[in-house]
Image 1 (cartoon, rainbow, N blue to C red):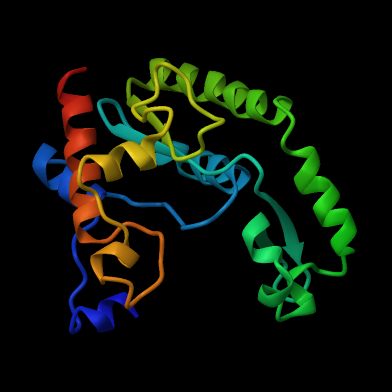
Image 2 (image 1 turned 90 degrees about the horizontal axis):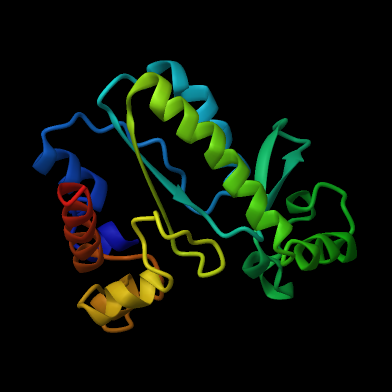
Length: 201
């Protein structure tokens, strides 16, 4: 719908702009809205393709998300808190037979800080592989609970980008489309931020 709103054009994403500026071939393995289990799993699947001097940018999702197996497709689906509002559950297959009270209990449990430490433990493995293989690793996130001093992102990364001029699709379209994902200007500001971070070591 965003592409249709823009008369059939889609603006370049921050990763496309960044790879072009740095002279790298882009391999974007990201899938919007997934859990950190999916993200770490994708890293594991791609590790044999990562080479010396590559730049790997790992954008962690929100820690509260987790995944279940969709029985109809035998593949993972991500469970996110905002999709479990009564008006948004339009298919019983979303929960795969798991009781909604159980799902809510899991989501509530995932607010514990140990789930944050789980991600940091994964980073220990990624960092070791980075040293052994010789690739550069850059971490970032929009999750205000998940942020380390070595992350490229700030503690309130999304809000800080917006304060500096980034716009989501809702703002960019003057409310004609309701979507909190970044639009053209948002991706441009995120690109500039990451470029500055990488160029300054």
